[in-house]
Image 1 (cartoon, rainbow, N blue to C red):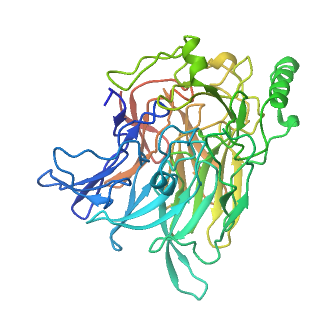
Image 2 (image 1 turned 135 degrees about the vertical axis):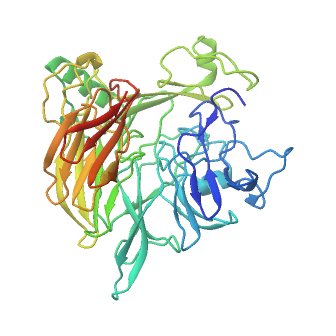
Image 3 (image 1 turned 120 degrees about the horizontal axis):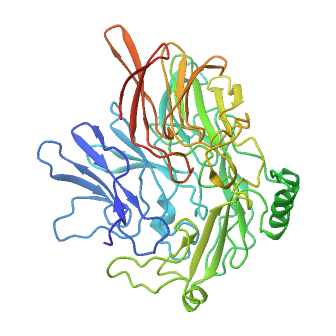
Length: 486
């Protein structure tokens, strides 16, 4: 396996004498990448107990030293969750690579991608599957396992539920015993655009939409949504909008023509998921809104132009010319993909504000309790500089939140590098403090004696362009900065 093609990005889940972990597979490099199989180990002996391998028969098996797990299967790179009482482990599945062309995917790839999958913790046997995107061509993989909450049922009973967040901004509410939608929280299959898909691929004519809870999915873009710091860059964005393929959400990636993807794979609710207050039955989610653009091109054109070196998978992968995000080599397929955020020449999003929100949803009444823009433009100036007026536009964000029993939520995910405390009943910012680097991490809260602390890792994020660093910062609950290890 080439260096960097597989590594563990999330902490293992330790439950019922199993240490369970998967890994990140290098996106969009080839269709002969490492296996996305999930592995469970014995925490005492270190021996493997089972591997869940979607391409093997049976799926749950114990590979020996000379066995090879099925290559190129969907992987689960985010944090896993589990219900110990039910004995079930919940996996947030990604796609079989590459993300934007699925012509070489096998039936078991399509059946397991972008799905929540429940496995028996002790044996690895699959119990149920719920898919959030069919034949995913937009990198809408599930970036975090579902959150668990007990909800009132239609007849007064308590339903053990889970809520699966998605990059689309949908909230799927499922019975965590069966994977079926909880009564009162239905899911509908709705028609989506199908024109323009590559001739050697296909697209699903419908996709699942969660209609039980309010969605944070943005409305489809219009030309009047195009925005700029000046009339000139706004005009450039309008021209690009007219020249692009776009019929709303799920417009398939086109060959030789730029396709607008919105919502895109950075957001709406990414690997942070949502926080749930189990007493108040509130869900709090910070969301991000940034369109991307994708263009597929024939591989032979790129190789003959010298943009992309040839590679057969042996040895380390050669580097393509251009930004690593913009050129997806997709070796082994007929195409390469160009993928980038949709920014104008000043490196400002073509889609105008609001770029980030924080929302509270009542899980029982199924209504939005409050919703506010979150974050400012302070650290997002032209040409991605870190100097700007702090305009209250809301700002794109990646990173989780935590809720205390006292009714305070903490979140530092926004690209303006602040840690904020929110009143969960109103969404009002109680206090904030400037971090020395981007806070794209989930805070934690703990107590020593009578004093409560909130801690966050501030390390920055390359994709968001926030300031980098290597800081661990703790605060007392009254807002004063406490012990900080740099």
